[in-house]
Amino acid sequence: MSLRLDNHLSKCELCPRRCGVNRAEGEVGFCGAGAETEIFRYAPHHGEEPPLSGTGGSGTVFFSRCTLKCIYCQNYPWSQDGRGDCYNVAGLAGIFRELAKTGCHNWNLVSPIPWLAQVEKALEIARKDGFSIPVVYNTSGFERIEVLEQLKGLVDIYLTDLRYSRKESAAEGSGAGEYAGVARAALKEMWRLAGPLKVDSKGIAVSGTICRLLILPGRSEEVIENLQWLSDNVGNDIAVSVMAQYTPAHKAVSRKPWDRRITEREYDAVCRAVERFGFSAGWVQDFEEMSPRNLVGFEMKEGPGFDSGK
Image (cartoon, rainbow, N blue to C red; front, top):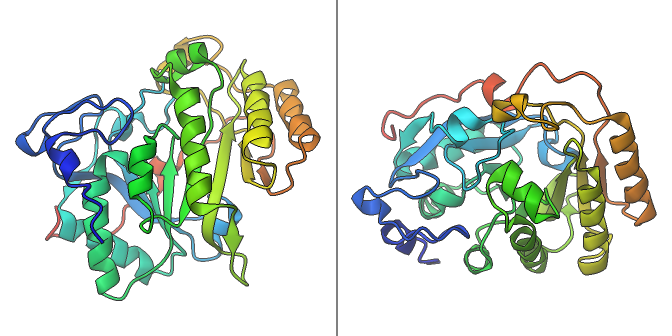
């Protein structure tokens, strides 16, 4: 199956920014991605939604680079500053094989947009070698519909954010004022491609769509607005994952109201909305007054390296 994703290396238009740079010749655009895949960490992850983590863990690959510049990003050392190691396609395929060998239930691609051409080739190699587990497309939601259409047959599960409903918040928080319209259109396309979440006899996800909604300080109303939009435009049978884990990080530590955790009042308002709009599939994260000590990407042990790929 040829998705022609290689075309984007000579003129990169993978994300809505459509920089048009020739990455094959060393040019870089907004995200800073070049021609060779960059990865910060990869390992089984047991802290994702239950159908993804299961008992064997979700085979998570934290790719470097990102198409957003979130001021509160916990992963900024690799998503924005570019920390990580370079892998060729053979090395990336080796990572996929290793994660499958350890018993992970899926390949969980975290912010893979800049690396889709390389991912496509690496998955083809891994599958030819006899490894085949579902692919989770773990995204901020800032996606082009035209690119999502090309992922049909490559991605099984969409794990997407719906983070803002208002232009001002998206511009201030992530440097993408157009986020809400783009992410909503992308989510509708993901729903068309994958539909509702489906699990096997053991409760492990095999296909479908999960929408994450992160409650941001001072912006709980935007989560409620997005819940209403989901109910009106997608339906309340979509699996939603309401996240209360916001922790000030990066530039947010010195900017109000981004410099605080969410309040219990903000949390309760969102929980009531989930019930009011009739969402029954999914999860609501427990409210915690204290910030979590560990950040997943930093605390995960790095998987064994592949000399042929670095």
